[in-house]
Length: 416
Image 1 (cartoon, rainbow, N blue to C red):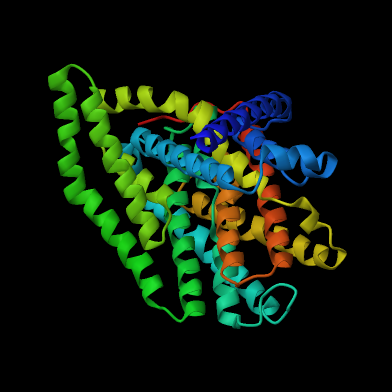
Image 2 (spheres, rainbow, N blue to C red):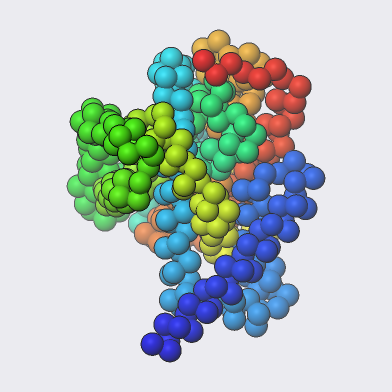
């Protein structure tokens, strides 16, 4: 149909612009110590209402009209994120994670406990401010929300920073990814509890916590045993055939659907799915099939789409700047400081602990997703939304250059 054809033509134009701007931004920001993933987030802001919409609103509206084409971009961005997080889980050194599970757990607990205390206290103090929370919100709900906002980690961004720096399979990388996975799951459960209480439906929170736990338990036991068949079939066939890949992708999207359904977000379903898959030839060949197109084409759409929905103009209100400064300071202190202290307590060097704290402190687009859900559910106002957007941007922009500066000159950490 002509309408569908026109939609496809416009989609290809959008993708062309997105990829060009992402690569140009990546080339420029690389000199400032930023990774490609941060450049893609900046590219989204540049293409959105904050810059292109300000300088050339007609062109911005033409490229990214609020119609079906944006829904297609969103769907593609979710596919890219799910595929990428599956590859991260598939290539995580599970033996190394098991060897350091206790340390990762301590870092994770600290990465949640400190934000719950400091973020929760901030939420209680701000709960009665109508410029920040809606009138339906009670202090304890504001406390849980601020705790989740402070506890969240930019899981996809952290993973990609480690991937681009070649440290995803080192001790530091494994501890950071493992702790971030636990922290983000806890943050989503806190948010689910708040949303459930606002709707008067506690079953939502029960479904998120219980469903997530059942999913993880099933995948770690029965699922892991079932998926060993993938490696057996790969060895029998002399490689991963199209039929095997089709079955794998079916399992992956089903896992993403299930975890989205229970309320803990598809990224965790994909990550855990990759985590329990067999290693060896199967993992290597699947990575080679999925990773290149995902990283080069689909994943940039995720970051750019989120950037297109960010309005920097929301951050310029003078009445909110004082609270914004406090929020940023609390964010660095509770998340970065808490994870740094925990890493030191479990035996990490000063350099390793600082690197882990820096990575865990980045919030990125996971924060943006979380606060968008809160805004849509009538929990927070555009004022608090703007404050938390600024906090997410600053903690994320700081992560990559600080991480590389901290690790500069360090001997590579052992992988085993």
